[in-house]
Image (cartoon, rainbow, N blue to C red; front, top):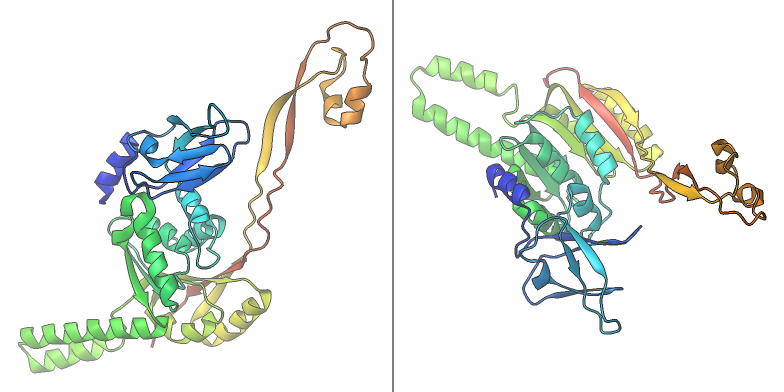
Length: 353
């Protein structure tokens, strides 16, 4: 699907066969689930009844459907949504742990991506970062993504094609194998194509030799940014740094600090400077109002936020209906992701010799 079609698709929001759908229980703190691809005749089972795909097809975002339950007269009520990129990545079937949206969005920011850029990604994995990169480079950009594991390579293609009717698939070029081998092979193909064009257009033997000599000094395949998710990125960087444009960035995703230390030690011999070493931590908060029945209208609101015991001790024995005071509950949501990885941002400082 092209960008224009994707915009129209999101505007109308109608669910069709092949779509992925987020279904959310229409209740406070209701559970959510991603189901699909939608297919006529299929059923998704939930704790509140069966959700039929036929009842979703043709509906639009935020429509409500009721599940069918054999135990109750009425099944649960569900609200329909199109999955966001974050929801799609976190709820898709995995072949490995994905790069979480908190890290993927930060990597895109560190790479300073502009529409039309060409980015190299090594370690496609579950395509979490791939989708963020494809969205960042835009319709005219390109993401070269490389994965060693054949099963993960095929699964990643399936995931990219399945998001928003394949809106971002055209921006992604999948490769299977070693990133060094893949880049070398693409470079050889470009060099061969360029050489053939020169032979066809040669007019002066001396000028042709001079131009060829100049071309040999710089690789033909150059990237505006590189993202590496692999155990030993410093090994591949010995070759890959030549394909990174001067003053552009390479971000390495490393779970362990020992890997960070090894990387910093290795890049001292390369034209790469360490710009940032970051650990990203998102803390979700629960902020909502609630009613406190304290039995004393004169009690300062600040007292309501101390302890539940303090609230229960304030006047409750005069038999008179008490006013209700609204207070705010503010605390972090107890849903910790924990440490994922360190992001090491490197900057190319000189041209490759």
